[in-house]
Image (cartoon, rainbow, N blue to C red):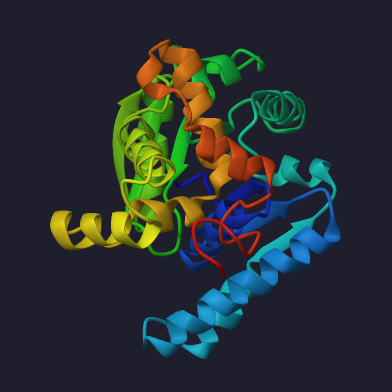
Amino acid sequence: MAAIQTIGVVGSGTMGNGIAHVAARSGFKVILHDLGQRFLDQALSTIARNLDREIAKGKISGDDKKLTLSRIVSTQDSATLAGADFVIEAVTEDFETKAKVFQRLDTITRPDVILASNTSSISITKVASKTTRPDKVIGMHFMNPVPVMELVEIVRGLGTSDETCQATKELAQSLGKTPVEVNDFPGFVSNRVLMPMINEAIYCVMEGVGGADAVDSVMKLGMNHPMGPLALADLIGLDVCLDIMEVLHTGLGDSKYWPCPLLRKMVDAGHLGRKSGQGFYKY
C-alpha cells in the first residue's frame, strides 16, 4: 500500500468519475483517462458538483475541494497511465471493450501494477486471460453513487494472488470503503441477488400487476428499501441492467435469469433511465 500513490482510472463516466472523486479526496493522485475531452470535462464538472454537496453537508471545506481537484489529471493519452501504481478500469460493461483496455494496460504499466476492473458482472478470470499478469488482475466493484456507498465487492479471478487481494482490500479501506471478498461467478453476489429482483419488478409492470409507483412503494414501505427497484434501475441505467441480466442468463443457463421483454424494449427505445431523461420515471 505504501507504494500506491497514484491511481489510474480508465473511463470517466458515472462510475469512473465517482472512483476518481473518492481516490483524490482520500489523498491519492489520480490519472483520469477517457477517449474524448468532452467526457473528461463533464467528469470534472460532476466531481466539482459532488464536492460542493459535501461542502454543503459540512463533510469537507472549500480548501478540501480545491486540493481534491488539484490531485486529478485528466488525459486522452493512455500512455500517461504508465505513471500509475494501481489502475481501475471503469469502461462500458462489454467484454470486448474491457479486453482491449486490459491488453493496453498490460503493455504500458509496470509489471508489478495491479489492474482492477469495476465490472458488475463480467468474469475477472476471462478479463485476466487477456494479460500476462493474471495474478495481478482483480475485480473492484464499487456501488453507485461511489462517493456515498460504502461497499466495494472484491472479486477474485482464478489466478488472482493472495497478495493482490490483500493490497486491493487495503486500498478500498484507504478510500473509506468496506471491502467484501467474493469469487468469480456471473453477477458475483451483488448483482446475482439484485438484478433478478429488478427484473421481476419490471415483469410486474409489464404484466399489469402494478404501476412503477406501486411496485416501488411496496418495496420501500413494506421491505424498508431506501429506493424502489425501478427507481434504482433508472439510476443504474436500464442498458446496464439488461447487460447484467444477459451475463447471468448466459453464464448460469437458467431461464429465471431471462431479461424481461419490457426491459429490452425500453433499452431499444433509448429509455435508459436518468442518463437519458426517461426510464420508468421522467427526469
